[in-house]
Structures are given as C-alpha cells and as structure tokens.
Length: 312
Image (cartoon, rainbow, N blue to C red):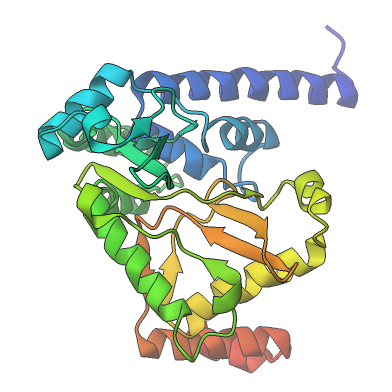
C-alpha cells in the first residue's frame, strides 16, 4: 500500500483522538463523581495532551454533567435537615441550572424574596468515593507497569487527600468565609472588586450549601463582557491581580478556578467585578513557601538565571 501523505496522517490521527476523547467522556459520564473530576483535570492539560481530549473534556465537564433526579435531592434534604426542600424554601426550582462533578445547583427564593443558589451533592458519592479511588489507583498502577514513564501516582494521592474535603460543604463554607475576610482586610487591593457569595448557615450541611445567588457571565465569555461594556484586558488584569493577591498576600490557593467558577458582572461603579464560586478545595501556603515563590517569580521577570536556579 502507498504511504499516507502528511495530510492523510493528520486527518486519521485527528479522527482517532476524536473517537478516543468521546469514549473517555462517555466513561466519565457513566461513572460520575471522581471520574468526572479526573476528566476535568484532563481538560486543563492542554500543554500535554492532544487538543481533541482537552476540548471535549473542557466543553462538557465544567457545568454540563449528568443531573441527579429531584427525588434524590428531596431525600438528601430530608436526611440532612428533617425537611423536604419545599418546606425549607419559599420556592425552589426542581430543574438545576448547572450540574458539576460533585453537585448540582438549584435556584430558590426565601421568605423575603431573596434569590438563592442551592448546591446539592449528588447522591451516593460518599459511599462510592473509597471504591472509585481504589479503582483509579489500580488503573494508574496498571498503566505504569505497562509504561514505566507514565507516573500519575501523585494524582491518586491528591484525590485521596482532597476528595473528603470537597465532599464536605461545611468545609467549603469555612473556606468561603476566610476568603471573604481576607479580601475585606486593609491589606487587600482588589477586595472592592471581588465578591464571595454569602452562605446561609441555617440551610447548611455536609451535603447541602445555600448561598446568595450571584448574576454574572463566565470570565471567558468575551461577547457577554463586551455587551456589558467591559474591557477584556481590564477583566484579565483583575483576574491576575486577584489570584496573585490570594497566593502571595493571603497564602490561599483556590484550587478550582475554571471558567464556570469565575463569573464577571458590571459593578455599580461601571467597572468589572469578579464573583468567585466553589471554595471546596484550597491549598494554604506557609510564609517560607510564599517568600521563595515570590523570589522565583521576581527572578523569572528579571531573567535572573542564578535566582531561578536558587529558588526553583
């Protein structure tokens, strides 16, 4: 047979990756929970993986995940609060506005007419977490046995350490409160332009988190940003300043800042405001690490090769 041309090879390779990425997406959807979480991680590896995998995972696993039935939502609230959702809120919509790997969000209103976002964990995640983690660990070990250069054991260890935290919405509420307090401190430069939704402590449990509803568009929705009269460059600068301040000043790393968790709205001043969502997983940095990390970035900016070696 004649050798394939370069264009034919590229076309065949693209088709192969397209099929593989769709199969991986179906696997994530079928198993849910931790598998969707790992699929989201794949969607961030555009520097390592073929674009077909990154695009499919990124486009489908942020806030368009499988939805839990309303009957399971009612059962969870009854178990956690002793009341059904229609007893807890003046009104609540049965159809969620978004669904992610660990939870889905319903719109509700309280007795005073305030609009609320109710985050409800998918049923069965806690019970299946240990089994799923062991399965993922076995798969990683199997692939590493076949391909010694494939070492993703660190990812398994991260899941073991962090998944219990992400499944505890009371822990998330504490992270959100700390972030809000940090941004309200005199040391904060961006605090006036960043909003953290207020949590309703009376409607909070390990599996249910109720907070004020925040309007806004995704930080990557250029058309919506321009429609609000906001400049993309100014929004990008605010995003960079916000996360730099959280890391270098407050020592907090928001570990899931993807496009569905960073919203933008037009503030009363006409300037952009960020709305930060999903505070389930944070990494706290000590002072020594922050100093070294700041010194590394300074060396990178100044092209100080010795400094880069010293602080890496």
